[in-house]
Image 1 (cartoon, rainbow, N blue to C red):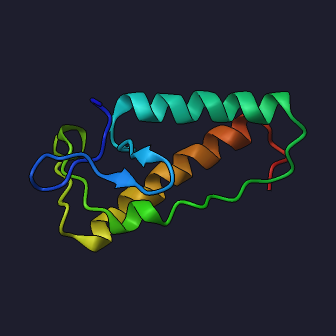
Image 2: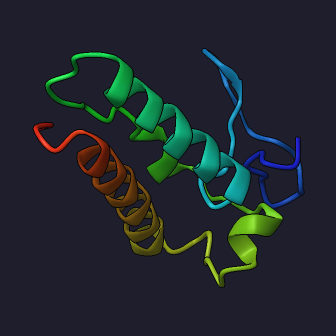
Length: 102
C-alpha cells in the first residue's frame, strides 16, 4: 500500500485489470522494476522491449513519493517527463545488462 498511486483525496487508484497501481516515483517500485528487468534480460534471450504503459500518463499521482519530488499532478507535461525519465532509466538498465537489446 505504501507504493500506491493516490488520488487527490488520498485514495488508491485501481486498474480494472490488475488492481492497485504502484507509483513509479516510489523507491520500492523503481527497485522492483529495475531488479525484475535485469533478471529478465539476463536470464532469457530477449531481443527487445516494448513498454506498454500509457496509463501512467493519464493518472495524476498524489502519493507522498510523487509529492516529495515536487511533482505537480495537474501538470500533464510534467507527468509525461517523469514517465519518460522512468522508462529511460529502465532502458538504460536493460541495455547495461544486455547491450544487444533493441
